[in-house]
Length: 182
Image (cartoon, rainbow, N blue to C red; front, side, top):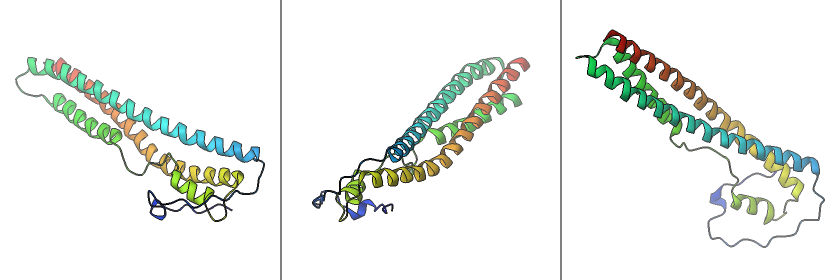
């Protein structure tokens, strides 16, 4: 009994809304309300996790920049030419830079919100308006599909964050070896 969600092309901005027809009064089913609220909580938690991952990537990038400038400067002051550990440190920093930028940069395709136009045209102003129970059920299923799609991308970002943290460790270790060789 879920309604198909139309895309925004079906409802141009500024189009005249059709007169909303009052659906039959139905008591909200507390179970469907709970399912809807949990779906909303899950997608909100996921959105917060994305913000957290991006913030951590920025912190790792900042730490790597400080380490590279301080320790790299010390190595440069002590040695005439780069030694192999310094080259490893620089390579690790450059890879870390690419991974962190990949994590931080915005990406199309994240779905955390429902379109008001789709909700209005698909549920409220439809020829046969949905009752609150149908809306809760349908929106919960809709959010779950978005959660599943988002989670695949978020998991890749989490792996990238682990790689970046490992590269930071490699960079620090390589700079310290460079200092010991000088």
